[in-house]
Image 1: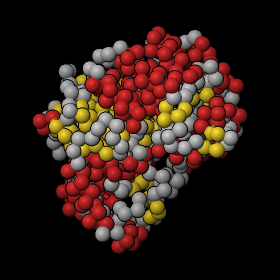
Image 2 (image 1 turned 45 degrees about the vertical axis):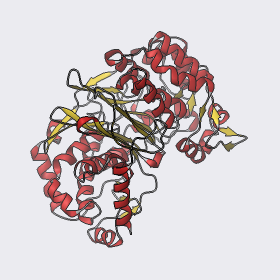
Image 3 (image 1 turned 30 degrees about the vertical axis):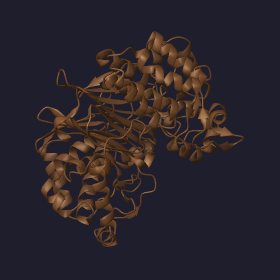
Image 4 (image 1 turned 60 degrees about the horizontal axis):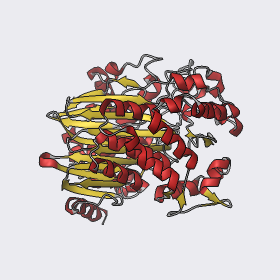
Amino acid sequence: MRRWLTWIALVAAWLFVVAAPDAGAAAPSSAGSFAVSSENAAATRAAIDTLRAGGNAVDAAIAACLVSGVANPTSSGIGGGGFALVWDAATSRMTALDFREAAPRHLRAQDLDHRPVDQMRRGLLVGVPGEVAGLAEMHRRWGRRTFQQDAEAAIRSAERGFVIEGHMARAVRSHHAGLQQSLALADRFLRRGVPIGTGARVANPALAGTLRAIATSGPSAFYRGPIAADIARVVQDYGGCLDESDLAAYRVVEREPIHVFREGLDVYTMPPPSAGGLLLAQTMLLHDRGQMTRAGRASAAYVHRLAEGLRGAIADRMRYVGDPGHTRVPIDRLLSDAHIDARRAIISSGGSHLLPTFAQPEHGTMHLVVVDRERNVVSLTSTVNNAFGSRLVAPQSGVLLNDELDDFTPRDVAGLFGMSDGGPNAPRGGARPTSSMTPTVVMKHGEPVVALGGSGGTLIPTSVTQVLLDMLWFEMPAQAAVSAPRFGIRTVDGALMVEPSLLPEAAVAELRGQGEMVVPLAVPAAVQAVRLGVRGQMQAGADPRKFGSASVVR
């Protein structure tokens, strides 16, 4: 029965025609002019409106990112940061921009020795926000409309109110106890202590004023002056050391994308401080497509071999990946034939290789993909880290702040990997913590063919990798690939977390016989993807796990 349902889903994805800009979770194949996939219907509409008004992929990505931060603050916002891969069709150049949050320069490693931190000291976890600087830098390099035009939809949403969608309503229900610890968030999302539901309208006038100031005066309005003072004050009130000089000193970093060539495809993905791109690139180099596809994606052999490779990449993350500005990350060696061959030999020896215990949360994240008429591509991930970040809201500016410094590796966890000094991702003043975010673009003969990324913490790279393999190896349409059941690796012990309907019972029994610890996957990641074909054909897929929204528009 499961196989019939899978085939029905695949056929439906192929036959489904053009979606309207306000379509729900699915968008079809079409000879489209442009495509958008995001985790929020309002964000997707903002991107489509921007493209229709003459904006390019970067303008549309800025509009969608800002709207998402207003309407879906559990996942992202201007109090956070992120990464973006941008393909410029005119120059045939791929650019990776790092606007990840950075630690304040006065942070001490011992400040984060004991986690979780006390609620009254959660300002210690707030990193310098990078999203405003990142979006402004994207606009400076590639924007076609004015930044004010790109920001208008977000300003309007904050000023007049936005409608609570499915994912946001679920997040409010799940985290209502934490929201009660923030007067600003409780006032916005709770009514007499009861979470508001889908369809409710919520405004944020203070944030609207901040967005308008940024749109009018540029990023300096955020990083200097009253808004910066407001942010620094609330962080310090809650035990943090971030100050106005940290905000004024923030800079976007352009990095060289990780690039691997495999089976006629150029795969570009995010370099450190992302560890997600390394995992994806190692996986592409490690496995043979023919051998894996013959086994079948719902087989014990496929899942076990893929899982073993992913575990090895996760271990490499812990041992080697940190902020390149503060530690040497040996990317060339980690992607070398010798390293990949050694990993392949370990997998071939049989059994399961479990991980030392470690955990990194990263649940408050969103991803979007935009492809415009000229086939410029933006794959952008933004985050506030945990759901609703630190739950600290700067009172005058309405900015919800991240808790990104929780992504630094705790000293005791580093010790499990034999690193007494805290390892490459130890807390350091000015450093950017290692992330799982994995924006990725795949090229063939100099043309983009797939762009994707995801949200969901340490499950991001494993999920993005599986979706990419489904699209490239198993030739799944975009929507079928992002909707298909997946598995994840539990970072506390390396267990195989499996979504219902991925594997038949016989395959689960076979995996357990190989030493796999198989458990249900309760909180999956979400992936957004666009596939490009010949003669303008495009497909857009939005993950139903977070009520995503995708459109292909002629």
